[in-house]
Length: 191
Figure 1 (cartoon, rainbow, N blue to C red):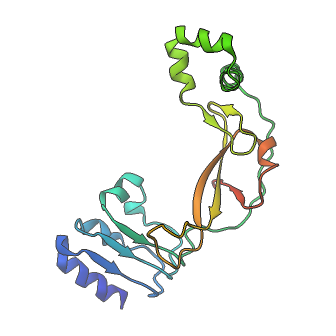
Figure 2: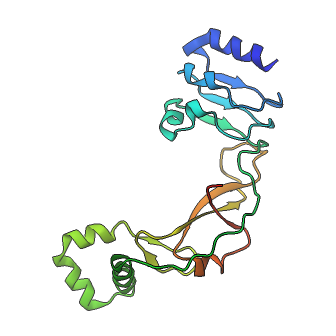
């Protein structure tokens, strides 16, 4: 059934605007989607799709689809299976230690550093790439743990009513903070 719908969509070519394959028990995202440049709405809810197909898995290729709506709820794209993290002792470079100190002093409005930083545009540029830890609130430059937190979407968002949780990217400065995290915060790891 899903194959017939895709063939019909392909015949429409660039004029195909909507592809709906809800509850078709498909296990793979259709790779022919890249051949539908006019596609605006892709609905793949409640299937068995474990990952994005290799043909459009790169973010830039997925953006080339120019979708206005993409529904993928009810697919095992994000597995919430906890994996034990290897607890590594953080050994930071001298640049990281210095950057963290300076950024945290600037956040605390240290008058000496606030004046001195004006004379070093390269340092200002480097520190502008700093991030803030979601747990302790301190600043860091390059060494962090990437996490995801699932939260319920706002009621005024224009999304599917079936969507119950939305992933939010969260950065944490160290394993010390990671061990103090909320139970709804999951570390992202390559497995």
